[in-house]
Amino acid sequence: MHVARKQPKKVGSWYAVGALVAHYRKKARLTQEQFAELASVHVDTVGSIEQGRLALQPDRAEQFDELLGTGGTLAVLVEKMPVRERMPQFAQGLVDIEQEAVSILSYQTQMVHGLLQTEDYCRASFNYRFPRFEDETAEQWVASRMERQQIWQRKQPPFGHFILEEAILRSAIGGRDIMREQIRTLREYCDRIHIGLQIMPLGRVPHAGLAGPMTLLETPDHNHAVYLEVQRASFLVEDPNEVSVYQLKYGMLRSQALSPDESARFLDRLLGES
Image (cartoon, rainbow, N blue to C red; front, side, top):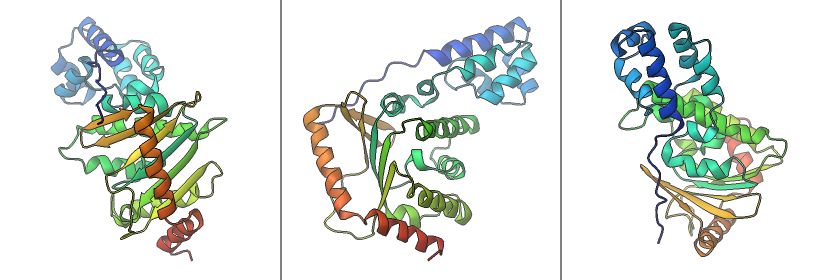
């Protein structure tokens, strides 16, 4: 039985940044409505930022600094914000481990894994969410996801292995051009020495992943965890006995999917390059 990790109420860094925005706004003798008009944003956006419910984006921080005459204070605070704090709260447990992981193994059924997404594909995926996000919230998530991908640029990047269902590549998220560029990017990842990619063909049986997607992570101390995400909930499984079951599942999935070379050729065919 998996027990959802209880998340603390989010009253941390963004709450403090929002309080500072409110302080400077009041010091400038502006109401939320007046400041929203100056910044060309909805008054609800200003309220959400000041209450810490919405992260202040870098470009917005620079704009607020200019409007409020704060000398770059807000921009510096946002720049120094840890990656974890920029993530949606339910995913923060994942990011804590992901940023230092020595290996990341993932099986996905609906979408390309966030660590492999192009920016346009990522943005399109959030545009399709229901109910829709506020525009700034979506951009916050896109920026956070793109920043997470910096782990591949580390001096010693993690080993990454990804199994994607073929149906993901047959979808039209973002339209033909965006999907094609995403497939091209996946093909490029196939040639990286520290990343493995396998495609699970349609109709493959037996199939060890019918219960859904999963991400397995290993820390520098060789501790292991499994991250599971469903709709608006997430689970971080750390019990060794439970983790072992998912490792067995993942091993079986690797044997059932197309080999790395077959997967690369499959992507080539989708791109019309073979």
